[in-house]
Length: 335
Image (cartoon, rainbow, N blue to C red):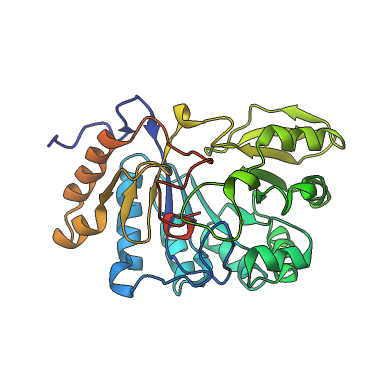
C-alpha cells in the first residue's frame, strides 16, 4: 500500500491522467430502451445502492484527487429522489470545473430550470429517433413529445451546450441519421452517434446484424452535409466534426471501429459503489465497502481510489460478434 502522494493527480500504469468521473446515481429508469436493459428488469434493493451522502463523499474525494469533470448518469438520474440537491452539492465542490448530466429527457420539461440553478453546465439527452412509433418501440415506455418539449425547455435555460446522443442500430434507425443531424442543426445543438455497446444480454435484436459502424454513418451524412474535422474535445470519447455553415458539432463514439482507449481519461462509479476502471472490462474496486468499513476516513477512501489506478486496463475487450463477456446492463454501469 502506497502513501498518499503530494500530487493530487490520478495516473494509471499507462501514464493516462484520470480527471473525468461518471457517477450513476440510480439503476432505475422510466424507459426500458432495448439496448440498455431488459423489459422486466429487477432493480437493486435500497441497501445495495449508495446513499446520496455516500455519493457526495465519493465525489468530494475524487475532486480532491484532481478530477475536474463529473457526469451524473443513471438509469435515469432525474427519477431519483433528492437528485437535484445532490447535483447542487457536487456542483459547489471547489476544484470541479464542470458538472454535466446525461438524461433521457423525460423530466426536463419540469426540471430544466432547477438543473441550471444546481450548477449543471451541459446536458446530454438520449434521442435515437424522431419517429414517435419507433421511439415507443425502442424505449418501450417513452413518449417522444415529452423529450422534444424537454429539449426546448433546456434550450430556454441557456445551458452551455446541449447534445443529443443517438445509438444507431441497422434496420431500426440507421436511415434516420440525416434527419437527426438536421434536427440538431435546426435547434443549434450538438449530436453524437454511438455504436452499440455489447453490455448485457439483449433479446430484441442480434447485435452482429444491428451493428452500424461510424464510417457508414459518415458516408450517409455526406450525402446531405459537409462535415469538417474538428480538434474540439469535451473530455469524452467523441471524435467531432463541425457541420459546415452551422454551429452544430457531430460526434462519433466508436468503441468497435475506432478504438479510443489510448486516451482514456475516465472511470465510472456504479450505483452499487463499484469503481469501474473500464466500460468493457470488469476491473473494479468496491468503494462502498471502503466507505462503510471506514466511515469518515477520507484518507482511507482516497488511498483506495489511488490504488485502483493500478488495475485500470489498457483497453476494452468489446467484440460485437460474440455474446458479451460483460453481463451487466448499461443502466447498472451508468450510461
